[in-house]
Image 1: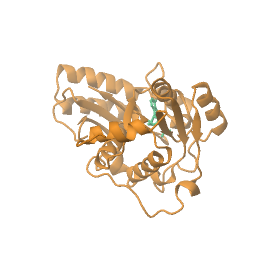
Image 2: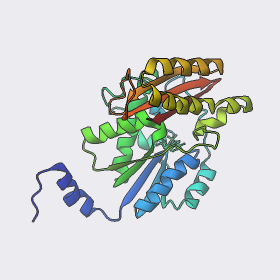
Image 3: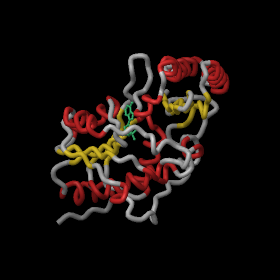
Length: 275
Ligand code: AMP
C-alpha cells in the first residue's frame, strides 16, 4: 500500500503507473507542415504511442475570422503524419466534439491581453477543445508550439488550475531559412507579401540584440513599429512581456519575450522571441 500526500506523488503513483503505454498527443487544426512535424518528432522520441488530432475548432474563431476558408488538406496531412511515425490520427466531426455548446473553460488573467483582447472568446474555444481532447485521448504528454506563446501559457495555467494529469511539452518555432515562422496561414500570402513577411522575425532578432545592449523597451519598440509600418504591416502588437504573466515590461530581462502580431493584407502573422 502507498500513502501519498502531495499532488506530484499522486500523479506518479496512481495515474502514470496505471497508464500503459505512454501516450503523446499533438492537438492541431490540420494543414500540417514542418512546424507540426517538429512536435511529432518530439512526441515520437518520448512516447510509445503518438496521437495527432486534426480538428478545425469552430469555437476558437471569431465571427469575422477565417473559419470557413481555413486551409484543409486532409489527405496530405495523413501522409505527413504517417511519414513522421504517428500512430493515431483523431479527426472528429464538429457534431462529435460539440453535441451541445453549454460548457466551456475560461482561464482568467493571462488571457486578458494580446490575442485574448483582440480575439474575444478565442482562448475559451482553445481551452475547451484542448480540455476535451485531454479527456478523450487521455495522454501522458501533450505538445504545443512556442510560436503560439500565449496559447502555451494559457494551457499551462489551465492544466495547473484544473489539475490535468498531463505533462506539457513546448517545441521551438520552425522557420523558413529567411526567418518566417511556418504557419498554416502562410498560404494566404501572395508572392509580394511572402517576400515582405520575414521582416517580422528580423524585428524580433534586432529587438533582442538592441535590448541586450540597452534594456529600455520603449526606444526599441518604437523603431520596430516604425520599420513594420513602413514595410506595409498593420501592427496589432509588438511588445516586450514577462514570460510568467505576459504583462508588458518597461525594462527587458531574462525571463521576457518579444511578442508580435501584425497583418499583411488579409493575413495575420504572429511570432515571438525569448530574451
Ligand atoms: P495549429 O494547427 O496551427 O493549431 O497548430 C498546432 C500546434 O502546432 C500548435 O501547438 C502550434 O503552436 C504548433 N505550431 C504551429 N506552427 C509551428 C511552428 N512553425 N513551429 C513549431 N510549432 C508550430
